[in-house]
Image (cartoon, rainbow, N blue to C red):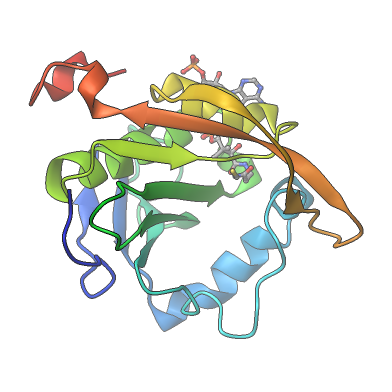
Length: 191
Ligand SMILES: CC(C)(COP(=O)(O)OP(=O)(O)OC[C@H]1O[C@@H](n2cnc3c(N)ncnc32)[C@H](O)[C@@H]1OP(=O)(O)O)[C@@H](O)C(=O)NCCC(=O)NCCS
């Protein structure tokens, strides 16, 4: 299990579709615009003043930047943000992922690509064996995406999350990915 927070260093992670890189000041307007789209704002709380640099210790955030053809969209376009969280209690393995992508890029395989990449970074580089995610129980797209990334449902957390309009609370679905389900060191066996 990881023994230090990852927040001090944000590595650049490259897949066949995207580059996950540290967020710069120039990305703020783009990420705020994406968060303001209805397809995203229904699931993410409105950003605070310090966004996207207001994350807690133990959290790292990446800008999701397209690599360009043959993947979707133009090279260099920032199309979302993904974050990873690590707890610091050595007796509990706590790590998690959260993500949003711009609506025009939904259902093109990016979510699966990005979540799988950050999941493997948490497991293979940061040393976690357990990664959890808790999307709203009604967020079928997120649940489908995380399921495609090998996460399995644990159960419903009743009234876990305040609604993005702050008028009430809703259930979330706790999902887990445990590296022990797969052969040690064999990333190719993972979904
Ligand atoms: C959740 C989100 C990141 C998914 O990203 P995506 O790029 O659209 O997902 P992908 O195209 O990689 O799809 C991954 C899998 O989920 C499925 N899926 C995606 N959206 C779906 C939907 N609306 N309904 C049913 N299945 C869906 C895909 O079919 C695919 O399954 P497969 O690999 O078995 O074919 C994206 O919808 C998003 O940013 N939503 C708004 C913000 C949000 O809800 N974030 C999560 C908060 S917990």
